[in-house]
Length: 521
Image (cartoon, rainbow, N blue to C red; front, side):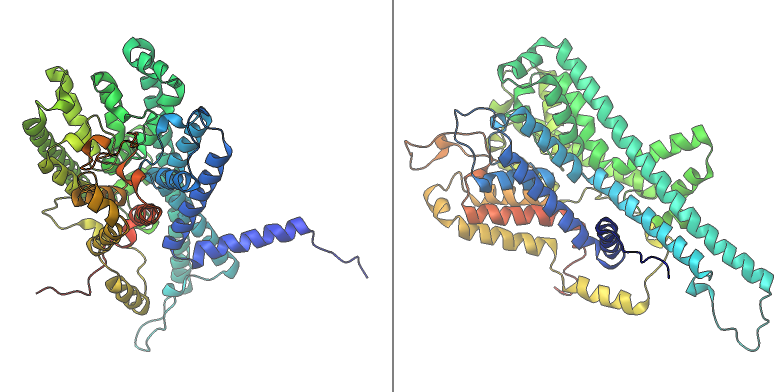
C-alpha cells in the first residue's frame, strides 16, 4: 500500500482561488465584477490615504468621509474635490495617480481583453479534453439528406478549433496593442511636460512656490488627463497655468487620446502596425472579421462609425469654442491674457467639458448659457456620434445568446430606469439633503449649481462651480474660502449620494438602454 498523499494548505488555497476566479470569469455578470473592482480599489485608496502623512500638520487632517470621497472620485475618474489638492503629500499624490491609472477606461478595457483571452483559452482546453466539436456543430441529419462523410466532419471540427484558436490570438494581440498604446502615450506625455517645465522658468516657478515636484506634477497630470479624471496637483487646477499656452497644448491631446477619440487613434495605430508588419490578424481587426467580433472589444468601432465619431467630436468642440469666445472673450476669467492665450484657454475648456474636467476659468464666473451647454456635453456618452448611415457594428456576426436568454435580458433592460430618470432622482435627493443650505445660501447652492455637480459626477468630468464666501446672501464671519468643489461643502448624506452617482456614472454603459418600458405617446 503506497503512502497517502495529503494536499498541502498552500495547494488547497491555490485551488480555492482558481475556483473563485473561474466563478467570476464564467458565472458573474460583468456589471458586478466591475462594481467590485471599483469598490475594492476605492477602499484600498481610502486606507492608504489615511495611513500616509499629509503634506503639512498646519491644517486639520481631512475627515474619513472626505478621504473616502476623494478615493472614490479618483478611482471612478470623476475628480470631484472635497480636500484641497495641495494639502496632499507627494506620496499621497502618487497614490492618487495609481488610483486614476487603475480606474481609467483604457486600462480597465485591457483587463476586459485579458478576461476574454482567458475565457477563450479555457474553452479551447475544455474542448480539447472532450475531443468533441461545439454543440452547434452537431445536428441531427434528416432522412432525405445525404450523410456528411467523416472527412468533412473532421474538416469542420478542425475549422471550429482553428476559429477558437484565432479568437484567443486576436484577443492577445489586441491586448498588447492597447498596452503599447497606453505606455507610449504616457511616456511621451510625461517626457514632454517635464521638458517644458525644465525650459519654461515661469511654469516651473509656479510649482516651486507650491512645493510640488516637477516629476510628480508631470506624471500626475498625464495619468489624470489620459484617464479623463481631471485632477490637478494644484489647488487652482490649470488656472495656475492659463498664461502658459504651451503647457495647455501639451496636456490637451491626452484628453482626446484617452477617451473621446480613443477608437480613432486605436484604428490608426492598428493600421500603422498592419502596414509595418503585414500581419493578417491586424487586417482582420480593422475589417471586423468573425474572430474580432467574437472578442467584442467595444472601443474598436467600424471604420464608418469611427470617422463620424471624429467629425462629431470636432463639431462639438467647435460649437463650444465659438460660443465661449463670443460670450467670454472680455470676461474677468480671461482678463490679462493675450488674444492667443485666450484662444488656447477657450479651446482647452471646450475639449475638457466632455469628460476630463480640467479648468482654466472659474466656472462660477462663466455665463449661464455656457454652463448649460457644458451640462449637455457632460451628459453625453464619450462615443456619441451623428451617424447618418447604418451602423455595421450592429450587424457583425458573432455568438448570439439563445432566445430564452435574450428575452430574459431584454425584459430586465426594459425594467431599468433611464439615465435621465436616475439623474432626476439623484438631484431631487440632494436637493432634499441640502435643503437648509439652499434656503440659507441660495446663490452658492442654486439648483443650477447642484445640477452641474450631479451631471459632472455622472459624466465623471469634475466640473464644479465651487463655493465662495463672497456669494453668501447672509455673510458669515467664520466662513473661509477653500479650493474645493461645491460638493465639498455638502452634508454627509449629500456626499454619500454623490459617491453613488460617481459609481453609477462609471458603470453607465450597463444602463444606457434602460427606460424602454415607458411609452410617452
